[in-house]
Length: 80
Image (cartoon, rainbow, N blue to C red; front, top):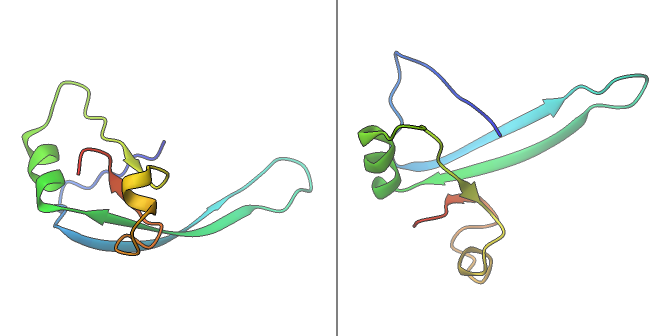
């Protein structure tokens, strides 16, 4: 689970690309990976309206997303 917070910025529809690095204990190498997130207008509207929990799932493993090159293995709002 990731949480992004910024009161001076609003999410817009589009494709976002990022890089994440997670440190690990001991002398193990950090885990590092590129990722992308595709945010639709529907997802932006839903998140802007808010709900009590403020939790929104983005996935890259559903057949409707993996069967098309449209999403290129990006994380997509599961309700899109």
